[in-house]
Image (cartoon, rainbow, N blue to C red; front, side, top):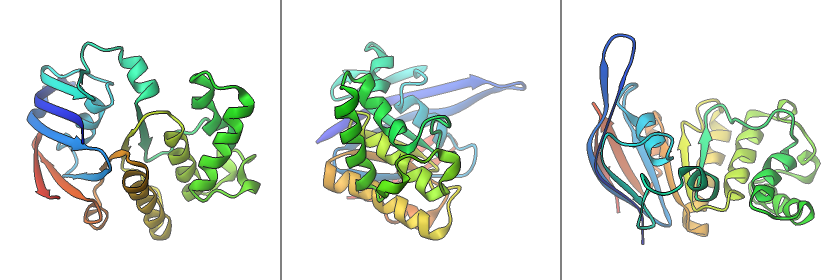
Length: 225
């Protein structure tokens, strides 16, 4: 089932020296239950495209529809709060909150009681392989792989069904990289998420259901279902 539709989207920005056409006339769709990988050279527009899907920026031209709703006219703060979660290379966990508190936080924002949110957060952490003894650890006390798994658990708790992952394995060793990609795939295939992964790593991209390539702001499907 279609979750995101991108129609003739273009976006440019001004840097210190020039106007950069970061995304050029991109049209595509993203389905539920599918893991997508977007590859491309640095500066090709991958991260800018992801920020458009996250509602952090609005296209100069074209439209993005999520579950049939035009992203430019809905409450984008509510969209980011309730429908989409972004996972970053640098984890972006709250440093003064424990693993459990990091995952509990979006549940409480949704109006859940602290007790219920805590129980659900424990379930999400367990689902991504974080043991109970780590629930009370702060991010600085956890390995990179544990931090990224906690970030994925927090994404699962966000209430939405869209995960946008921007180089999520960039700071991980090979073993943890494999674990994170497997987790993202299970979100798509077992929990019916739409997962869009931006990566430079071609081996990771080849594990996706659909591979896309960004070049000079234009997106093409390299391989897919």
